[in-house]
Image 1: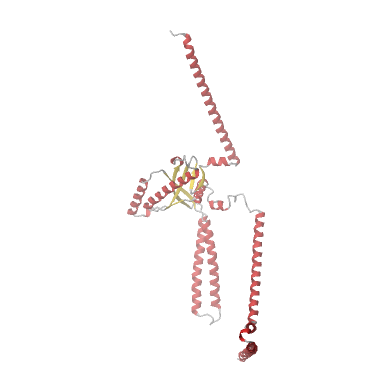
Image 2: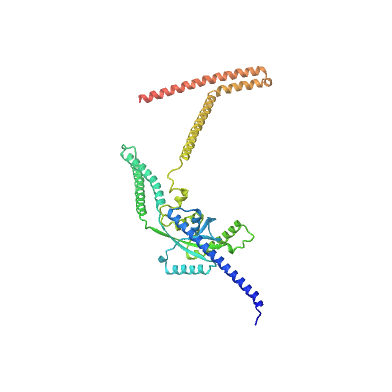
Length: 404
């Protein structure tokens, strides 16, 4: 039989271990209870915010499955990156049996060459014809203006007096008018049909996507910065996307990599299926995401634009006036120069003789100056005689026209 004094240390150790285990279990229980209370509190606050229509940045980011869109990639949480390919669908039912077999064989090869995971995603969107209608109406306005011009031209030529226009000219104007009229009526019918189809909200079209993923854990991130890691991830995703695009061409499927703007539109339509056809991504981005609550620009900004426009208009007006005045002054100087050109020629000749008087002799210089003055007088008299002759000739022509 064991000695009781020997059992006391053993029992003491066992008791201590049991106490430690009890305290550990109590601590785990307290942690679980507090964590559950915290989650319930966050859930209740989120529900209250949703009921009151109030959201903060953290609640929205918790709801979203991604953090940001950058470098044509969707950056998800926990270091996951996505790149998306948009594929153009083909009408498989209209193909011949040989074409169907080739497409199926190409798709099998596409699946066999995959060495990484992908996701096929189909998104159904409502057809928005507002942009098409806007472009049609702008073109229709030009067609209508040209049609009215040709119509008025043809009517004027047709109602003009006999002999002014030949039959060939009238027929040519008629052909141009009829051609423009057909174009005008055809464009008007297209706009009417497009507006009728835009009223039907059941006009849908499908878009097909291939989503390629990559994780930061697949890269050795110990000795690289965050930007370097992102560049490495982008290169790997781009390589995978290009290889998929090459294999898809064997299935006669064309594809392209979505840029950041197209990724925004893709996610916007995924999270706003009901409102995407009313408030599109393009409208949201062009309005700065404030068109829902901002009905007009700031008054001070509007006034600043008006002042800037007034400055531009007044400055342009002053510049044009100054250019016109400078041009008129220059033209006036040229005109005066032309009128005095004859006198200036003879004055320059006398000056030239005077400057070289030492070389040619004083007597010869004086004689030369006299001859220059004589030529100047003869030229002036000849000019006057020519002007008199021109006036007389003009008067005779007027009289002959009057007599006729």
